[in-house]
Image (cartoon, rainbow, N blue to C red):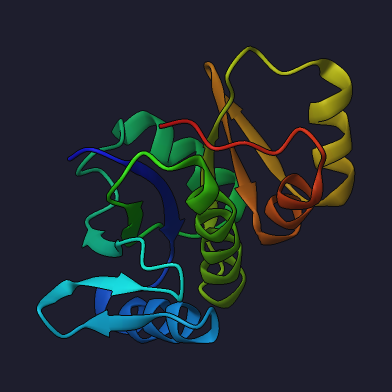
Length: 158
C-alpha cells in the first residue's frame, strides 16, 4: 500500500473498535466514498481508510508484549489508519484520528521518528502521558499522543 499509516494497539476486539473508528472519522468530517466504500474522504477529498488486524499481524509479538505490560492489559486489535496518498497535508488529520481512536479505545499509537528523538522530546511526551520505547520508535497512550500531535516537531513517517 502506498501512502502513510499510523497504527493503534487496543485491548478491545475488532468488533468493538470498528464503531469507534467510524465515529472518529465522522467526527473529523469524513464520509465513506460512494464509489469506493473502503475510502473515507474529508472535505479536501484525500482518501483515508482503516484496517483491523490481530495485534501481532504486522507487529513483533515481543513488542506487543512490551505494550501489554505497560498497559496492564492484553492487546486484542491493531487498528491501521491510512491515508492512501503520500500527501504531507493529510498527515495532521491522520494524527488526530490516531489520538482520538487511542483515547476512545484505550489504545497505544505507534510513532516512528525521522531521526532518533532527543531525550528532551521523549521526556516531554512521558511527562504528558505514557510512552513505551521499543527500538527506534515509541508507543504513546492517548495523552502522550495528544502532546505529540500538538508539539511543533510533530510529523508522521510514511
